[in-house]
Image 1 (cartoon, helix red, strand yellow):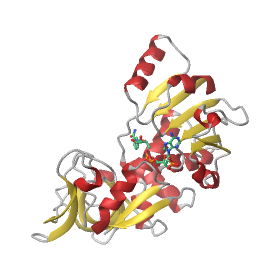
Image 2 (cartoon, protein in one colour; image 1 turned 180 degrees about the vertical axis):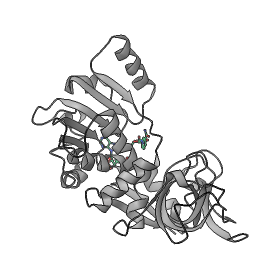
Image 3 (tube, helix red, strand yellow; image 1 turned 90 degrees about the horizontal axis):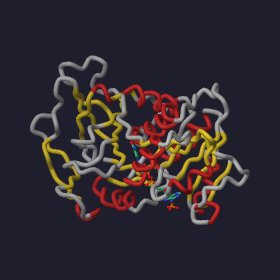
Length: 312
Ligand SMILES: NC(=O)c1ccc[n+]([C@@H]2O[C@H](COP(=O)([O-])OP(=O)(O)OC[C@H]3O[C@@H](n4cnc5c(N)ncnc54)[C@H](OP(=O)(O)O)[C@@H]3O)[C@@H](O)[C@H]2O)c1
């Protein structure tokens, strides 16, 4: 591949939205010792990188000298470094530690949706909320906010694997979709009961997988069980303040700020759940790489249902 050029989409400054993206021709990146290069299908993720996005699925074309678990032609799912990005391009270089095999049952598009969103949902439920996905734990009450989004739609499905009772919030247009994922009760977030997060059957939540922003602790607290936790995926200053105050006052209810640093084993777990038919990637829309700005605009609108996929 040395000397060959590829099409990529880059962002050379912060801000500017979809209009800030530039279509460029750049050299195909070469793998270092512990890396492999692959041709890609991409899930768009907003970052400040030169070539944007981190979540890719594709086929290995070349491996570095230190890679002995993959070879050319292997189908894979990978997560690229959030610091360097590189996903919105015809070829990308991935670390072997964040690359996992993609079995034939998992399409490139389904696989490309998984890395950040499904791994975050998996980690929030299994590690922060303590849910056992084989359903062997005590039956917990879970609330998933923004259950129609990328992280949320995986969180609902995974929570149901754990034999939990799931209440979910989403917009009116997605209520049937979120029910189809397995949610037991669905609230329209634009109604008074939805805004108050009140379960129609009066459930108190043992854990909230909080996939949106702008909901104050005072709204969560009355809806939590005595030891309920809010696992906040986008904690702002107010959430961090609540975290500190709850710790200092020995509150049994907790706010848990979560920043997931994915590991290959997490990625392998969610790919295998898709392979076994236990988890699905719902695709909001697919866009050609030549029209990546449409994917970008859709993503930053905050109104996707499931995942946005970019194809080479
Ligand atoms: N901590 C981490 O490691 C990590 C990793 C990944 C993501 N995140 C964060 O997790 C959050 C979710 O990301 P995402 O990609 O899943 O979002 P997303 O796909 O953009 O979510 C869009 C969906 O959320 C719905 N929605 C918007 N506001 C809502 C509200 N107030 N209540 C209920 N539903 C609402 C929208 O419905 P309508 O169109 O009907 O409004 C839309 O279907 C983001 O804040 C992201 O930064 C964190």
